Structure formats: structure tokens, C-alpha cells
Amino acid sequence: MLDVAAKWQPEPDWAHARLAGRTIAVGAVNGVPQRLVSGDIDRFLARHDLGQEVGALGLAFGDRYAVRVARDRLLVIGLSASDLRDGWHDEGYAVSTVSSALRLFEAKGNGVRHLLAQATTIDPDNPGPCAAMPFAGVMGTVYRHGDAETLRIHVDRGLAAYLWEWFQWQPLFLQE
Image (cartoon, rainbow, N blue to C red; front, top):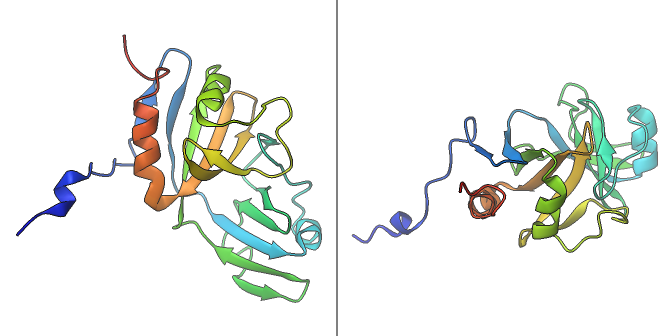
């Protein structure tokens, strides 16, 4: 019988997958709770003391924060199921756990700006309010975390191997 799976590259071992170039390193971040919140996001942010959400290339801090992905939708990082149940909330928002649906990558180093130039058409000096954007040919949620040289990219888990291969072929990561 024809083995059609043989034509695809095996998925990396995400717990150990790392790439490093002279000015940048990238790897997968595992075990981070990811929740999608839709509806009255202002009430949600106030209720959970998350402050202001970050947009495209915005700078998020800490283990718990919110990232704007649409007009009335947030990707919330770090709130576990014990902190917040899935479903409709009387305050006017709905919550869905998406941790298993999204793969999180983190790129670090002063080559982050060059990576953005290769992967997006966004102006890094005027990025906009929404962190959802095309990144390397796929939709992702892209923002900075902790400092200006750390970029986080959330993509659909089914597209993670494609994005990893895209990273591998970027001149930033090729060894001379």
C-alpha cells in the first residue's frame, strides 16, 4: 500500500526544537495556557486585572496577559481552567481553551527585526492594534514579550511544522 505520509517531513520534537543563528534563536514554548475570549473584552480585562491588551508587536510582560486578535476578541495567556472556566459568562464574554490548537514559538535576539522583515509586510514602527497577521505565509498572532528583542508567534498547531521549516531556511539561521 502507498505510504502517503512518507512524503511529509516528521514533526519536530517540540520540547527540544531549537534553531540558532548569529543574531537570533527560536524555539517552541510548551505548557502555556492559551484561552480565546470573545465579547465584552473591557469587562473581561477589568474582571481579571489584566490591564491593557497588547496589539501587533506590542510588548507584553509577565505570565498573564491579553493580546488583541480582533475587534472583540482576545488571546489570553496564562489563565488556567481553574482561574477561568470555559463557556459563557454573565459579564458578557465567552471563553474557550485553545492551548491544544495553537503552537507558540519564541524568537530572541537583535535579529528579531530582520525576521519580521522577512515574515511580514507590517511596519514595525507603526504596527496597529491587532496582533493577528500573516506571518511567513500563515496567520499568526505576533507580539513582543518581556523586551523588544523577544518575539512570540502563535500559529495553528497544524501549521507549526511548516513554520518551523520556514525558519530553518531563513538566512538568519543558516550556518556559513
